[in-house]
Each structure stands twice: as structure tokens, then as C-alpha cells.
Image (cartoon, rainbow over all chains, first blue to last red; front, top):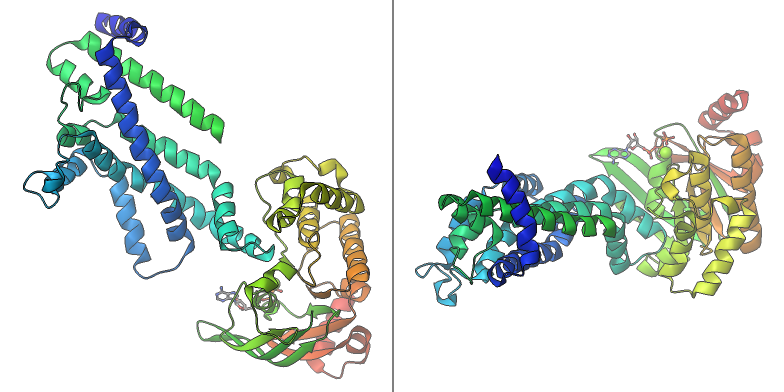
Length: 226
Length: 236
Ligand SMILES: Nc1ncnc2c1ncn2[C@@H]1O[C@H](COP(=O)(O)OP(=O)(O)OP(=O)(O)O)[C@@H](O)[C@H]1O
Ligand SMILES: [Mg+2]
């Protein structure tokens, strides 16, 4: 229990300490998770709307696949991405292994199904109505897509919030493809896992608190944006 | 807008729903469509509005096949309208913003129609907080604001109280007098058809059994199905 309390106090201390190493870790976490969520949003919002509002063959299979992907364990995703980008893998020449880019790729794969799934559900329910209204009022294709995005903005925000939550909090994938290299690929969650291994519970909790505070700030921002 | 319907057939999973041989609706007709439940009235309305595809046959708009530009000039108002998740004002302004009309003009036109329909008080209300009747007024205002020359109404006053119904009818009437559009109105209310329409078509089992001037069809119909339907309605 004492570790908890000291950790909480330590968390605030860390935030105001201006310790360069800590800030690098925080910054990298944010950079990786925000980038992956942003990229996933750009791809997944239109994709989710497409799946939700269009008819095509194997649609049911695609939907089931996405739902399965939503609960895919991060370690598995990490492992698969690792196999693809490792030196002997098909994309080995790109030299992505143990880089922030690799972490972004892995998180992109984790986040996308969540946003696609959220948008699929929302647009399946309301998409036909929205498209119909757009058409009866004279909207062209682009205007219809804009209207869909506007009308589904709550679901888009929900998808982004859940997706970002998954990205910033996962440790398995970034650990495997990033390797928790100090000053290079070390992020908050991998730091916590490492500190725990070292028996440094106070600092582990402190970083955990920082993670929580940052999530809170970013979610508040997104929520406000709705 | 003049409409020409030719050999129009609609099947839903091999079930023949609509079969219209030949129908010309001259420009500026106010056509009522009546008929029993499941006759195919809504299906016809949706096909004309191109929200649904016909299985075969075609519809000519002013003697031309459909082109996407036509969507700028026609609209369909449903019984249960979908209003955008924004204010009443923005809902009504939406078709004008699509047409890149400038803000001042939009404001002027929206305020005009709000006054006409006596819903100025709803101007800044969120659309999802409206009652059914209020929502229907907003949906109609939104459909009329860009002055379509083809207006399709599908049971747009079902579940609306009499006084709101009068407002909606008055608005439509005024719109019709002012711009002489073609109006196609699906209705179960024969009295409403008599109050508004110039012509009426009776649809039964997907076929047009009768088409003509409203009083001709209602009072001098030779068709048994029509007569039965009408006498049943009039008693009500
Ligand atoms: N998407 C669909 N799939 C299968 N059948 C349909 C579909 N839409 C309509 N139908 C069928 O087509 C027939 C005509 O339906 P429609 O909605 O046009 O009737 P309606 O004349 O508008 O009836 P109502 O007076 O009850 O509104 C009905 O038998 C209906 O079950
Ligand atoms: Mg109907």
C-alpha cells in the first residue's frame, strides 16, 4: 500500500520534474499512439462506413473478421508484425525492427479494427437514412460522404477514444516490435513492465499515474470535440 | 416537371410488387396516390425519387432519362423524416448550403419559411428534441426551401394532429400555387386528397386501376375495386 501512495506522489513529481529521460518516454508514447490512431482513423472511418452502408459479397465474413480482430491480443499482433519486419522476414530490408515506425505499424493494426467496427455498427444503423436524406436534398457523392461523417461524429469520436485507449495502454506489441530500447523505443507501458521486473514498484506506479493523467487529458479533449 | 412512366416493373425477390404499364403525369399535376396497404404506393414513390431501382421499365423526367442533376430539382418527404443532428435552422438551411447559396440569402429564405409555417420559435432548437409534428414541419420546410419542381410526399401527415396537418397542407398549397411544381402525394386520407389534389391514381396490387381528375375518380368511378376502396374510406 505504501508503494501505491508513494507512487501517486511520485507520479506528480515526475510530471513536474522535467527529467529529460522521462519526458522522452512520455513523448514517444504519445507520438506512437497518436500517430497510429490518426492513421487508423483516416483509413478506418471511410472503411467502416463503406462496410456499414454497402452490399458486397462475403460481407458477413468481413464483419466477423473485424470483430475478431477487435479482440486480438497485442502480443500476437506484435509477433506477426515482428515476423514480417524482422531481418529474415519479407520486409526485412526496410530495417524497421526495433524502431518507433514498427511500433506505429503494430498499433495501427490494433486500433483500426476498433474504429472500423464502431463505424460499421453506427453506419449500419443510421447510414441508409443519412444517405437517403442526402440524396433527396440534392447532395452529390462528396457532400453525402461529408454528411455521413458529420452525422456519425459521435461514433467517430467514440471509435477514436477506444482506439487510442487500446494503443496507449498496450504493452505486448510495442515490446515485441520495439524492444524497449532506452532512448529509442522505450514507452510508458514498456517502462512500467521493466520497472516491475526490477522491483521498482514506486516508479512503476508513478509512470502509471502519468499515463492515466495523459489519457484523461486527451480523452477530455476528444470528448469536448464531439 | 413532367413524368412519363413506361412498363415499370418492380419485383422483390420474385414477388411482383409494381407493374405500371403507362402513365403520364403532366407538369404541374397535383397527383394523389391512394390504395390499400401493401399496394406498392411507397415503392412507386421511392422509384420515382430514385431511392429504389426498378426491376425493368423506365421513367422519363421532362422526356429525358434520369440524370444526377435532377436530384437538385426534386425531393421526397417521408412519414418519418430523418433530421440532421443539428438545429432546426441548420436542417432547413442544409439544401441551400449544398447549392452554395450565400449566407444572407439562406438566412432570408429560412426565416421566411419558418414564419410561413409558424415555427419561428423552433429556430434554434435541436432537431432531436422536436415532437413528431414539429419534426414533420421541419422536414417539409427543408424539402420546399430549394423549390423543387417535383415534390413527392409519402403519408407525410400520418400521426399528425389536425391543426398541424392544416399547417402542413396550407404550406403545400401555397407552395403549389406559387411555383406550380408537380406533386405526388401518397395518402390514406381521401379527404386530404380532395382538399389538395387535382388528380388521383388508385393503385391496387401494384397496378394502377384508375387515374383521372379527382372528382371523376371519387364520384364516377366504374372500377369495382376503386369503388369499394372509396366507399370504405368515405364511411370512415
Ligand atoms: N425491401 C423490401 N423487400 C421485400 N419486400 C418489400 C420491400 N419493400 C416493400 N416490399 C413489399 O412490397 C409491397 C408494397 O410495399 P409498399 O411499401 O410499396 O406498400 P404501400 O402501398 O406503401 O403500403 P402502405 O399503405 O402500408 O404504406 C409490400 O407487399 C411489401 O411487403
Ligand atoms: Mg407506404
